[in-house]
Image (cartoon, rainbow, N blue to C red; front, side):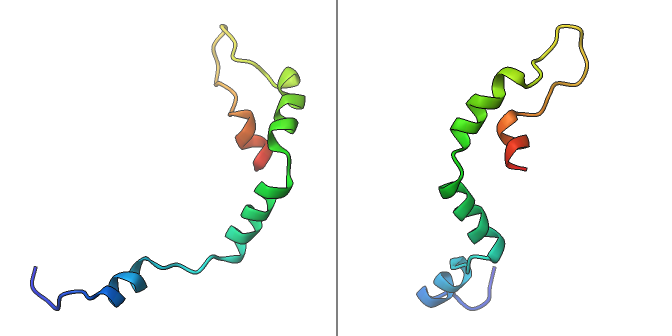
Length: 66
């Protein structure tokens, strides 16, 4: 292991992270968009898993947020 022991400031600096523009945008979207309402509105029209096989549909919430 060796090396210099970490101090309190080193730990804080290594774990502190400045939020990016992208993260701020996603946080704002989460606060503004009524995801639950939109999902409930679309769900009846979204493809359901079929017993015939094939690739299952992606989760509606993921597709909507993309």
